[in-house]
Length: 130
Image 1 (tube, helix red, strand yellow):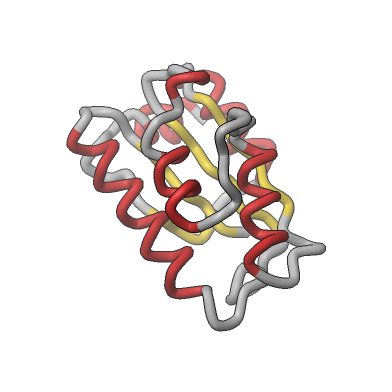
Image 2: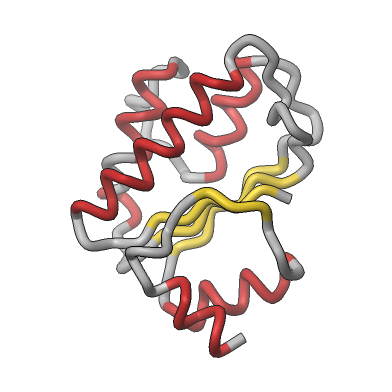
């Protein structure tokens, strides 16, 4: 776990990955690193609206969250209501499409852009799929 916590702190390695360890191990490593961990269960997601709602709930999005792709990008790039030296977004039970069909590429692009934005800020932002 110590090794995972150290790796999470490496801003250059941050990205979107399939989770290669147990969820509890990831949670413990994120806590050890002092990172915020946002956990979104996508099991019931069937489309854009439910996906956006699940992520808004996971990141505790503020009232201004507009439930559209731009609002998701803005919220993930802000997180001022939850400051942390780094972030871990865990997307569970989403399958290969995250519960999305036509919009899967849009969601993936937003997540990748978020990782890159936070790298420029010197803070790791990780996305794990399981």
